[in-house]
Length: 299
Ligand SMILES: [Zn+2]
Image (cartoon, rainbow, N blue to C red; front, side):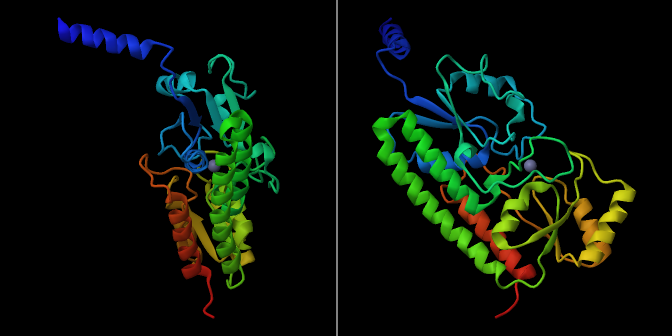
């Protein structure tokens, strides 16, 4: 009986609005979540979460599960990459019916410049949404996110801004290392799986000669394969880049056919749900080493 009343008290106190719950700030996708964790570091009274499972990767053809909908319905703030990456939220991008009254949407891309066109042969949003796969763009995103979080939570504005500044500094140093590599590479042309590396290519001074996946989720036809082989030979493409989130078979076939290296780079579109704080930097430094070993020239 005594245990029952203790339990009852506990349940009542948990349900009581007097006991203010932490504000739930939810990031849509894995890379936005990594950034959100950095920019909200040590900010009291908030709880940071991730909407889509960490291993999802690019959510171009994703549909929300009932679990995702419950997470979204509980969120006070939703942080998105923007630029059409979260098409699963609906074409209009409006969240009425999905989120609670008064919930706030923060679009990280809204204050980010230097965007690239989509360049994937499809009609669409017109802008390439894969800004997260570039340390230089991720740095701009850190500042954008900090400014917008500070606007919504002025009490902790200086903490967001300081976190954003520090995060941007580390990302700028990483971007500088990619740019430095660009100064000492032999071949600049690369063939990629889908248009995820266009921003990273720009950071590094690489040129995307062609894409394997001309159509979303579709393997190239025999005719398209022949065209890709022709492009690699004509443009003297230096390497084929595959990504862990998509099957590498087609890329490997093309590389073997033309005798150029096939490397796997990780755009950090996905990762482990227990990713450490330095996960983005660690993975990007791994990408940098692979590019150096494949395309770098000895000084
Ligand atoms: Zn993608």
